[in-house]
Image (cartoon, rainbow, N blue to C red; front, side, top):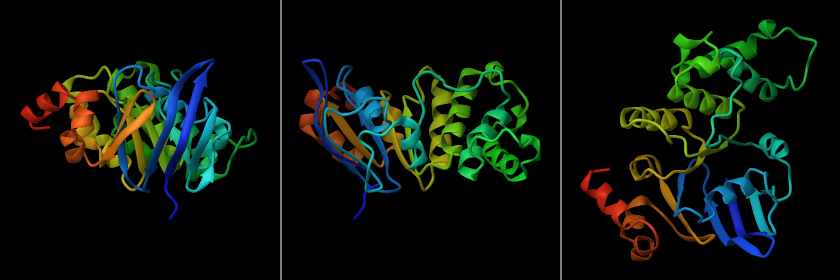
Length: 256
């Protein structure tokens, strides 16, 4: 069968330092996977390899069965993978609606066209409106992105990420910097907007991890040491020793 995303003996070195050391992972279509691990484990490097910011030293990355190991980020995006970043990455001087409309253009076949007035593109406007409502920012439709709250900007970025029509979504610490109530709302938003899509997220908040993920991949020293459902990862002594420890105990006590 063809996995949505598959890593095979993936390695990445910077000079003589090997950061990713033979990572293996196979994600089924529609699965929500949280990637966790201690600081310096290689999680961000893994995301950068998958999304094309870095090329691997060796090994393979397959998106829906097709190799993307040495493709550029825009080529990978056009093959069906989008990502968000730790730092919010939107057009600050465009309105919320305009940000979303820019995101849907390529998937609708408009590519780079300067001959059409965007306001006349009915299908693009309808699609942008749909995503506007999906991320619950319809009341902020004409507000400049720079004037949104932090949580609203993060919601907009996720909207832009999914609006391009990709089947595989990468979210890099989507709830970082949010209050507890904002985080709870955001988990529900992510679940809603990624319904039916394959999701990989790097996340440090164990409440988010256990509340969102179908499976958890634990990365330690550049290797995936465990990949399983949350309950099995909680109970994995190797994982607890390497990383989770008190975080698991805290989340169990808190009922996450």
